[in-house]
Image (cartoon, rainbow, N blue to C red):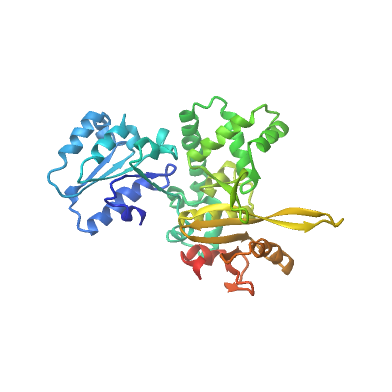
Length: 407
């Protein structure tokens, strides 16, 4: 839908995301079919896949530019769908030149090397419009899954939503994830960033995988390296490596937001994997932690729905056992922003008793505002509102209904 809505906005539409997440299929199959259904003539849809051998000559910018301009036969609108554009030298200049023509609308995908970077839009000097692509969300996953939704959630939390993995036979899923992680994503990061100590960056990815959703920062991670790995890696190097993972879309950092102070807290942050299958593959599928996995799935779902997602912090004044006044920080798993809307979401794998429920809703009650508040749980319970107006909903109902937050 984002591609459809961005037609003819005068900007170069740049589809980003890690490799194998379905960018090419989105552009050259789904979006092309949409254009045809809207009455666009096929000869006004210009396609090029730069990774095809027969198109090798078009990697030369002057040859491609001349070919592209020759495709324009009249004043009607033309749509250029260009796949793996980063393979062409000086592609930024070429695209900026084509974009200056009034009847051209440009859509591109890219992966590997520079196009793995999340700041690729800056290469187009303000002329780029990024569309971030994620692996399949759970509702999309279920459209291709043969079992029931409970089995599906377990499979999704184990193997993730990368299309090539979802469509593979069960015995091949783990192998494909290992190959993608080691030979594609890590290899691309090492090559692009010229990483010298590959072992350190792999160890860091292991640590993040083991502590998904935990608050951390480069200083804390440095101490872990010194204690566990006997390594002298610096916090500065760790910070750079973390940015490499983010640039490659392997992980996303969620920053903390002080609800009452209305200000961001720079550190520590939480890191979530864009695809849980990659995280689990990194750990050899040995750490099955449904609590953290559920939190990661909910985070990804919120991002797919177009929310900006932060970690909520609510500071309250209390007295300790000695009667001394102390300040304590309560945590809300996710604060979700989209335009003027804000939602608070807690991920609670299980609410076995009143004590646990009181613990989960306490940060909500301390916000002293009227924004929507939601608990997502794996407990077998129908959705309901309590006396405080807090919605409790089963994770499957939450994930499978795109309007679940507005029930």
